[in-house]
Amino acid sequence: MATENKVIIVTGGGSGIGRESAYKLAEQGNTIVIADFNEAGAKETVAQIEKSGGKATSYKLDVSKAEEVEALINFTVETYGTLNGIFNNAGIGLVKPFLEMDPASYHKVIDVDQHSVYYGMYYAAKKMVEIGAKGVFVNTASIYGTMAAKGSFNYNAAKAAVVMMSKSAALELAEHGIRVNGVAPGFIDTPILGEDKEMKDYLAAQHMHNRLIQPQQVAEVVAFLFSDAASAINGQTVPVDDGFLS
Ligand code: NAI
Image 1 (cartoon, rainbow, N blue to C red):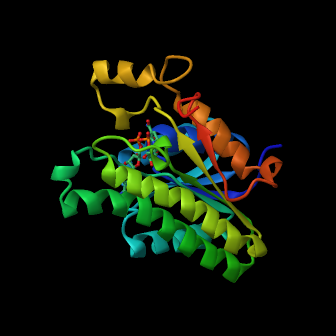
Image 2 (cartoon, rainbow, N blue to C red):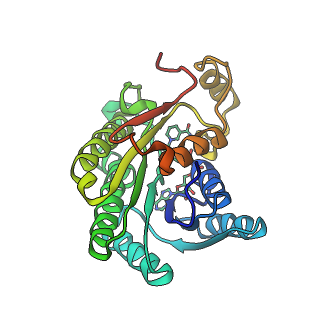
Image 3 (tube, rainbow, N blue to C red):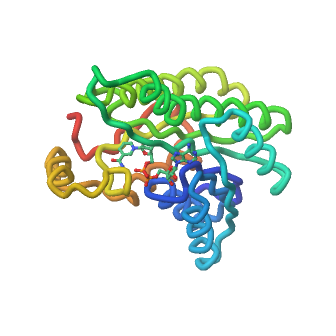
């Protein structure tokens, strides 16, 4: 059963997993706010949704800034009159050996990949409770939220926090009619992986089907988690990793 006529924010909707999830949610009749640093990418996603007869608007922000995320929530409610969910998905990687993981490199990834998820859930939940709206939050974690990888101390820490934040927020928000879940992708064929073909082939080989996962495959799961069909799934982070961690 699809979610319909809901107002949903998708952070990082200007590319990759966020963009494909926005397409899927819009196709199901929801109105989407594409929130991204990358204004051109966000506008492109909106144009594609409108071309397919859907409803969307773009919003430029840096998700690592609390006041900008709060402004995004206010903009959405002022524009559409309500808010029914947020997909906290924008993220970056910054790979470095631990002995070179200086505070700036550490905090950069923690700010963008972890704190943004807190800001998104916190400001969205406060506003939704204030206006009496119910809905769903979905957060993008990673297989690296449970599995350590060399060069990824910052990313491991951020994504592990996202897994626990989904559980913890779910526990407190259920009474307000808000469900919270996450997805933990394996390696997805998006620009975040870079252009190194040898590396991409290596990553592809870690999956049971020996290939990179497509962002559309993650979008299917994200759309399911937003839908009422997932009404009894709460506090979970669903692996979308083609058996990587099995
Ligand atoms: P992507 O690079 O295609 O998309 C990320 C989007 O986030 C971009 O549009 C970018 O402009 C936006 N963004 C980055 N920093 C931002 C900021 N500070 N403020 C606002 N927007 C910002 O990457 P992809 O793969 O779609 O990544 C989405 C999420 O999935 C990220 O959280 C990433 O960590 C996670 N992920 C990706 C995997 C992969 O293999 N591609 C694997 C596991 C998790």
